[in-house]
Length: 136
Image 1 (cartoon, rainbow, N blue to C red):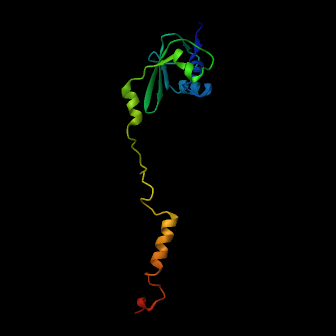
Image 2: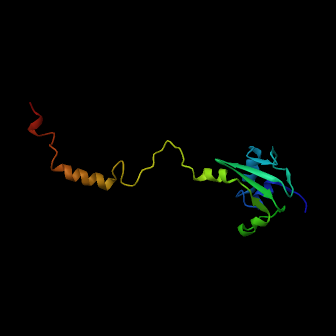
Image 3: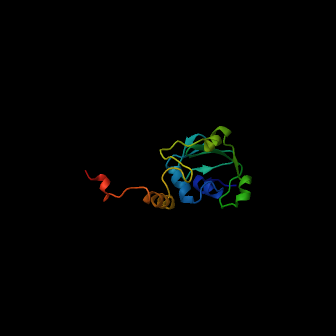
């Protein structure tokens, strides 16, 4: 079979949703073939190792067979073999460090309903500012 462009192959085996996304990733050096950077017009051959950097993981694929038309998800295994090491896949389940704090529902600031309930409860106990308690 004749060789196929890298951007077309990545799109055909469903690594990228669109061909333009695949071409952009190749241009931005997020895709390497056999350890070297390439251009979207680079041809792919059987046995090539493709690395795709999608933060935080670097996926590795082996070209089993060259294909130029988009394949269904169940047929992708005939054309592309995922050989990503387990250490890379473990990065997906690692806890994320972020500046945002995730909280359980009900913790932290009160909801609008909770605030109204608290105000209704406090109306009977809080002195009004008009009261003589504050006059001296």
